[in-house]
View 1 (cartoon, one colour):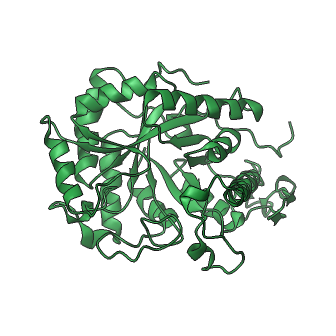
View 2: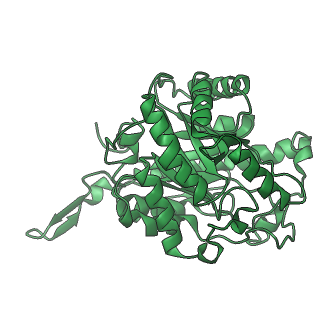
Length: 401
C-alpha cells in the first residue's frame, strides 16, 4: 500500500471551458476554440509546465446534460465534445512528461477497438497513456447503438431493485471489459517482433497469444493487432461515487477518482476500496486513490468566492456537482489537500472551474506552494506514466517463465 506521507500526486481534469457551466462566458475563455487542436495542446502544455502527473480528458456518447437520464435541451451551456482518445493522441507528440488519460465509455463500445486505440496512444506518447473507464446508464446513448434497452431511471431510483440490477449489469460489464483489454495488451510478448531482415522474419508467431475470453457479454479470441504497449499495461482509471464502482476500482483499476465531501467520508471511501482490493488478491499492488475537487483559485482572500458568485449568477441555480467546490487561495487549498491526504488518498485530481484561468492558478500558484511545503515534486523523475506514479512495468501474463 502507498504511504500517506509520500509526496502528493496531482492531476487535472480537463473538460470544455472548465467545470463551472458558465465558464465559457468568462473574458479569458476561448469558446470558439473548444473544438480546435491548439486549445487542447495549450492546456496540456500548461499542465506539463506545472509538473502535473497527468491530465484526464472527458468524453461521452451523448451531449452533456444536467439530467442523468438524457438530454436537457439547454442552449446556455457548452454542448459537444471532441473524441478524447484522438485528442490525447494529438497532444502526445507535443508533450514529453505529462500522462494522458482520456475517458472512454465502455457500455456500448468494443474492448478490442479500445485496446488498440490506447495501445497506440501509449506508443505515440512513448509510455504515458492510460484510459478512464466510464459506464453509461442513459437510454438516449443506448439508442445510438440499438443493441440493448436501458431503463429510464432517475438517480433517486438507483437503490431500487431495478436500479441495483442495472448497476450490477453495467459495472459487471465494465470489469469484464477491463479484463479483455488487459489480456489484449498482453497478447503480444515484448520480444514478439524480430525484425530480422537477413532471415526475412519480422515476427515470432509463437509469441502472439489467443486470449480466449468468454463472458456474459464478450467473446474475444485475440490476439491484438497492436504489439504490447511500451508500459506493458497502460493505466486504467475509473471515477467512483458508490459501492459498485468502488468495487471496480479495487478489483480492476490502477487509479480511482473519488469525490469525498469531508475527511471522514474520504477515510471511509479509501477503506472500502482497500477492502475490495484485498478481497481481489491485489493487496500487494499500488492502487492510487485521487480525491476530486472543483477549484476556483485567487491569491487575494475572498476573490475566488466573489468569482464563484459571479459565475453562479449566470445560472438558474448555483453550481453544485458531484465533487466538492473549493473557492479560496492556493495556500488554503494546500492546507485542505494536506488535511485530506492524511485520511488515505494518495493524491488529487483537480477540476478547474474555468479554463485557462484556474488551470494557471494550479500550475503557477498552487504547485509552488506545495513545493515549498515539500509535498510535490520539483522536476519530473520518470519517463513513463507508470514511473511517475511509482508503478512497476508488469510482467506479461502469457510469456513463459
